[in-house]
Every structure is written in C-alpha cells, then in structure tokens.
Length: 211
Image (cartoon, rainbow, N blue to C red; front, side, top):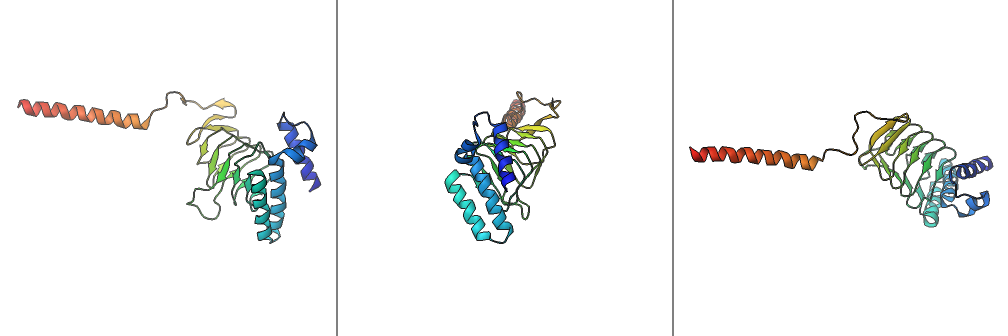
C-alpha cells in the first residue's frame, strides 16, 4: 500500500507542472484523495464488506465530488486532474498510467447487462467533459479529446474527437480522407432533397396544367 501511495504521488508530480510537493498533493489534491479512497473501498469490496465499501465511496463523493464505484478495477498511477464531476462505473477497467480530467464519465448506456462500462488500456488520456459509454475498449496510449462522446472501440495509439467520437489520428499520423471542417450536415442534406423533390413536383404540375 505504501509503495502504491508513493507511485501515485510521483505520477502526479511528473504529469502536473503545478504540483510543487508531495505534501501538497497528499493534502490538497482531490484527485489523489479520491484514488486513495477508492483503493480502500476496493479492498473492502473484495473482502465482502460491500456496505462499508459503498460508505467509503459515498463519503469520498461528498468530500471530492468524484465518484468511483468500489468494484471498478483501476491500475497503477492513475491521475485524476482537478476531478470535479468525474464518475467511474462499477464494471469499468482502467489500465496503468492513465490520466482523467474533470467532468469525465466512464459509464453505461443503460441497455447492457454484466459488463456495462468501458475498458481503458494503459496510458490513456481522457479530456475534460468527455463521456466514454458502454462495454467498449479504448486502446493503449489513446487520447480522447475534451467533450467527446465515445460509443465504440478505439484502437491503440489513437486520437478521438467529436460527438460521436471519430478517430482522427493513429500512431501520430492523421487519418486519410478525414475532413473535420467540411463535414456534411445531415439535416441540410435532407432539406436539399426535399427542395429538389418539390421543384420536380412543381414542374410536373405546370406541365399538367398546360395540357
């Protein structure tokens, strides 16, 4: 446990340029407090003390506004930066060296049973306000952009953006034939089809009137 605490603190110092000391992280960082509380709750959960586990996790919510279900499986050196509004569901699996920003939801869609929440590989970064929903897999070293809504699997070494999220980079290279600027508007396309159909009907009506 002591080694895990040291690793968590070291990970935050390495990833957050605002972190000045281990003392500051231990006493002032809500994300660190939430991860530490989760590890206690997870131990209680695994030893059959389910009520105490949920009590610990709900106590953490009141203190940090970060909710992590005790049954979630979280690897080493997780850094929750800022953290306000983060929710991590029961069947979520998170690998090592991941970073999660404020407002992130690792949740379910409400239509799945059993494994209902996402699996994040190692080294994943999830940007502020992003939602990763359902029993999907996010590959190692993948970056999810702020505000993205991820509903399907994302491969390793990728960058995903948008609603719903689309992969724009794989292995540091931009995905070919991807135009983020001139994206077709489906509503505009349907209106254009309707306008064209109306024009055709008006022409037919004119022809019938002349006859």
